[in-house]
Image 1 (cartoon, rainbow, N blue to C red):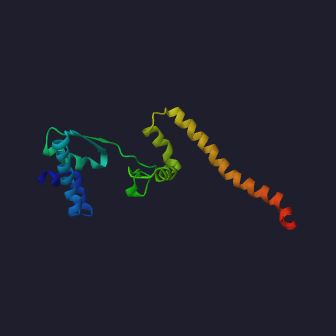
Image 2 (image 1 turned 30 degrees about the vertical axis):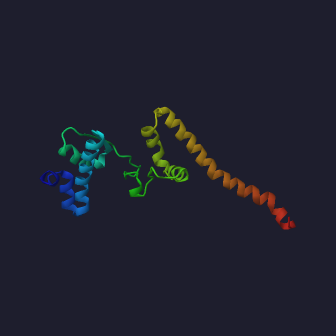
Image 3 (image 1 turned 60 degrees about the vertical axis):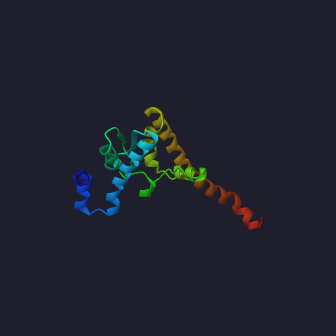
Length: 164
């Protein structure tokens, strides 16, 4: 317990807005879960987002044979975590193909370049080229409706008057 209370993340949460018992106990439960995975299945490594470091550390403190690695969070251009919990695009394992596709479509244009660089093996030059093409397509998607509206009014105006 003293180990949990001495963590900077816990101290700052307690100093700011406080921390619910559920939030505090979650770390212990995740640590216990990691130990059970080790005992039952031989799992020795836990991989998670950097915001999970404190939770993951509990397991390694309970058993020195366990290890944890964190990876940087996926952040949007606004600096917020890209996850379903923050209203961003979150990828769920139980998502239908349609839901998965829609979540990818919902990614903001400002975040696409960063995600392509971090989640694919594309080179920076290739991502830059894709982003340039994307900008051209965006312009076309704005111009096309304007052209359609103009062309439709010009060509169909007479037809509408004649009742066709």
